[in-house]
Length: 426
Image 1 (cartoon, one colour):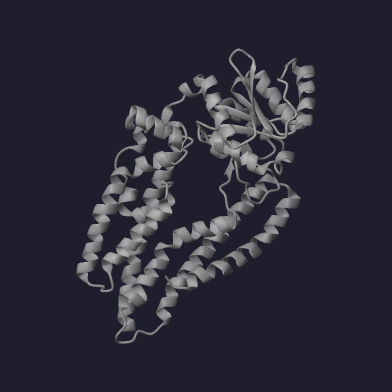
Image 2 (tube, rainbow, N blue to C red):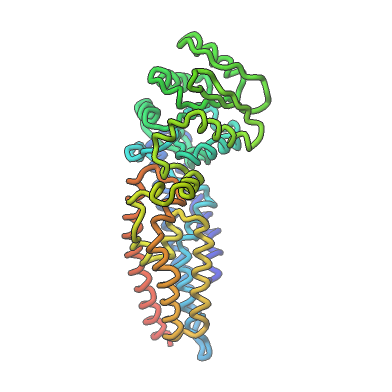
């Protein structure tokens, strides 16, 4: 791998931060949802373009060194340039992680969601209890993905719940989300917007699928008074401890209160809620649970109970382009598998770029990557990721199928151009 590619990471980060600084300032002061979406699209485009330029620069730099008679063409030119091309995808993911890039969504995304948890809270609570908030959303996301309305002045979506950015019609979006969601996570506060959201849950009789989260006892006491005065609801008494508290309504209209003192208490909350509200999960198909739940169902009932027909069968995307299929899809340990596979290919080719070694490499790709991934790629992807609906899985598979074809063509053209260029260099 040429040294210019890792070195260019620093320059890409500097240029990216410099170009996006005006966007960050504009978003913070304008507080516009549309501006947030537009700026993130521009930032993603900038990051993608800089990644391509850095990769092409690294790949072309190997041809600046003259070839002497005893040099090996493969080791000096083709292998480094090919490595630059292959590692462009993990390079993009590393850059995305360094700049804090996270996926963002719009209300169009909601149209195809089937299974999810909605997170209701006040924007003022965003900076409080970040680690505890991530624990809560992570625990619940093992069932269904957790979504929340995003703030209009944030450039990067924060960790935790997935953010959906909407216009001024946020009330219609929230109403649609609480009706269609499997679970409602409510972080109790006394802001006007949250009280409106709670009122809708009460009127629609959705409190039975709600988990209430308390991080401020004084604010909870005030909320108790408001709930009693407006709706005649009596919420449970909570001790004044220095910890977060969660509670939910049982089928007999009483409440179960859980004090979240350690990390394990979040898993205990998850298990108890599942036990007390089994009907919420029994009415949903088992294969749409989180990764751990799907693996349990796989062991108990077999593959047909958790993997839909759309996620079974042959995958041409995985067959034609196994490396990029591993990277783009959400297969667990994909980067490790990617580097192991590419390293083994390099060892098989060795230092002699001769037809025999190339044939061995092609046979290795065919029997150890292309055929196994082609036969099991869809199932691996379904088990390794949280798919909100079958439609999103199908859309992703179609995209990867087209991507695999174009990547294969580009890879073949790259090798053809490299070999022709080497003939002129000689």
